[in-house]
Length: 128
Image 1 (cartoon, rainbow, N blue to C red):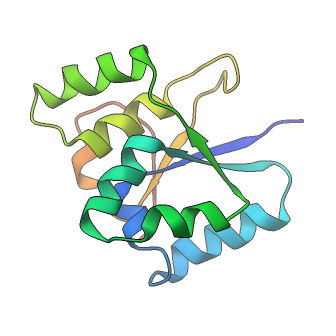
Image 2: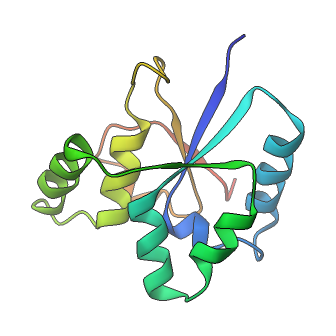
């Protein structure tokens, strides 16, 4: 079975509850066993810094799968941050890369696609 993997970044997490496209993606994932939604913990914490309560809200959405920040993620985030990329965008970039669990990688599903333009990562623009 081919799975569709999407990484939700900080901007998308902040749009939860206010964006029809984000809500639609979550609804789709809840009803379609081939769609997987991933949330890097770094993105969740960055969103929490801007809006208290986001982490608790994410915890009640069964359809979201969290990705811990391990050394490889921390290294990627630090390297991209040196290039003035925000922690949340850098975490989403790392999460979208191919892994053993996601050999084809993932799309970054975002309401703010501009920061990803020069980062060579596939993006699913939730505004389109």
